[in-house]
Image (cartoon, rainbow, N blue to C red; front, side, top):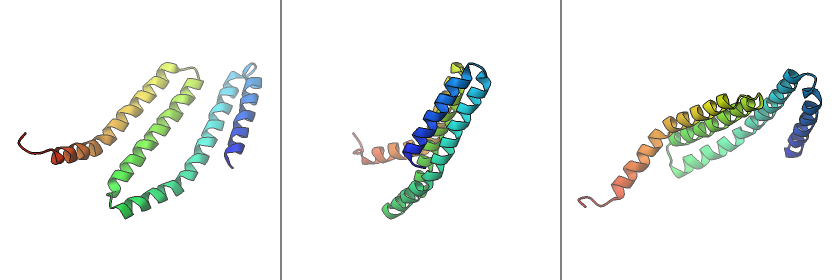
Length: 131
């Protein structure tokens, strides 16, 4: 399935949702959630090849794999938090969606601490001593 098929699926689901929403709002929400989940899972499957290329580049450049893994986890947290927040927003629960986004940001900061520490230590090491 390529991008045109994904857009086609999204458009068909949208039309169905608009038709069904008047009579069965819960079914319309479930249709939207499952369509979004299907697209999300399909795209996640495509990410494996990207991760393989990034791991190869990191190995060839000498970057420790822990940094690449941390960055990939951060990206994953961002995508999952956004996806979850959008589903909750579709259900009309804006305040819960905001909490999901906030939790995602906190988890991202926690995951980024080791990388931030290395960057700060590197910058401190580059500064001239005794000034």
